[in-house]
Image (cartoon, rainbow, N blue to C red):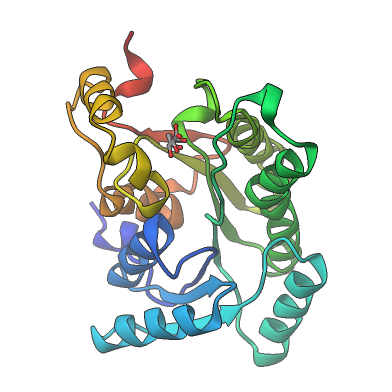
Amino acid sequence: MDSRLFDLRGRRALVTGSSRGLGRAMAEGLAEAGARVVLNGVNAARLAEAGEAMRATGHDVEVAAFDVCDEAAVCAAFERFDADGRAIDILVNNAGIQFRKPMVELGTEDWRRVIDTNLTSAFVVGREAAKRMIARGAGKIINIGSLTSDLARATVTPYTVAKGGIKMLTKGMAAEWGPMNIQANAIGPGYMLTDMNEALVSDPAFDAWVKGRTPARRWGRPEELVGAAVFLASAASDYVNGQIIYVDGGMSSVL
Ligand code: GCO
């Protein structure tokens, strides 16, 4: 096998929402595979800290603080990339929030906030990245879905709807941008040990449910997404388009 198949040297990867959690883990993994990584988040101080920590381990890291929900800020960020000659070869649309509430108690503003952050932002950032990728004749887009891209759980419906939308947005990107040599795919994490899930991990009943419901009998670790991310960011996936890879310990495959 050609060892360069998974080699990301010479490629720049923008990972949204990457100062911590799944985004940070994937950013570190892409850097390990040779990519120059652009960290993104809204908190400039936390972002700078993450950048320093990654540079300290020898990684080639840039930071770009902007709010993925602010279309003007997204467009300005890509204009700065253009001006600096920084091509985004790989985009990981990871930024997202969770908001747990039964729908009958859910305000429309909270609904919109989750949809905008978890789905609309992936469209806006994806569109701006794709314009440049089309001009260069190549690109990789990795949208972060969820187990809830396919399966619903009570009290997280806006998140579920957004993540279901991520699955179909990915197919739409494949349909429109595949002919321009852009491969758009998704990763569907299962129940991962992240800050976002802290309340669930520390709930003994929920913890037992996740472990009982998952063939792997455990929660996933953020770094366990790196393999799928490097695969979808590399030449190894040049004929893969519109797919979602579930990294969920098998939960979505069993009753
Ligand atoms: C929840 C969790 C899930 C997981 C993950 C599952 O409240 O059920 O937050 O949404 O985070 O997305 O794939």
